Image (cartoon, rainbow, N blue to C red; front, side, top):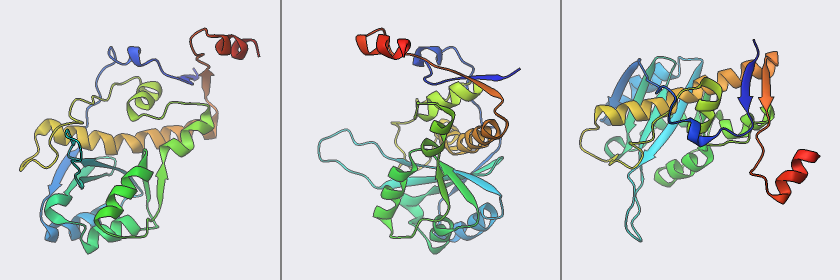
Length: 218
């Protein structure tokens, strides 16, 4: 049976979906000396998922540097607490690596934030927003894409939590790991569907405005 995906996934449908759970290891890196072994481990993988978090700003003029870099294999996610470690030579080596695919979403923005901490030349990164449109999918958010391709819900409840807290909660760690790890799943599923054409794209139209009627009749 061919997989059904939608050009635009209805956000109202997400609420009823089962939640995504990361069942692998989550390892927090809080000192510079820990970064070397973590990066060696990660660069031995064939693919990585990446994401970042920044403490939210709630007041005018308030700004914070990116404070968390999460990098995941298929079963292990490292949380680099950049507000404790800074971007060490090992982390810079990871960011500049050109041998292992690193998959993110809206990663161009993350790179800009990371470069604000430390200048580096980005290595082999692939942004899901640059590849998903090749299947005719117009959604660009991680939550909508994961619901569309896997019929599961990524909770966003921790997004505005304090990512510079002395100790991250289990819910924060789970959220951060899922955001990185899910990028691997999406990339590999998109690649599989592109290769096999084993899917049916359901074109979701905009509400019936005049423009929408024209599009339907085209």
